[in-house]
Image (cartoon, rainbow, N blue to C red):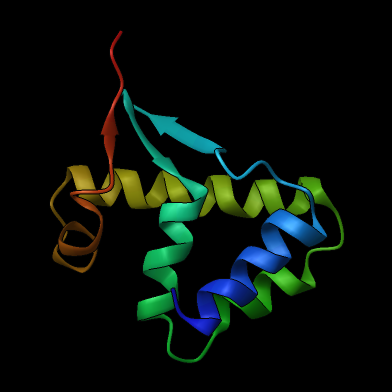
Length: 97
């Protein structure tokens, strides 16, 4: 793990008390928050995501932000958008209906 990942995890899981196993599902595909943070920690060189998360004052605001970001990632990964597909294709979980 890298230090940026640890910073992101601190804000999400420790400061706001979000469950480490929390995930979002869209069209029978899910992505765990911790997997999202891991990819962000390697791609977000300017730490914009950390900045946005630190501006959230409540757990509900963090969950709202994460739901929007992760849902968008799932949509773009399923569409095979290059910016997302390479980073997230192996991290999406197909849910059994």
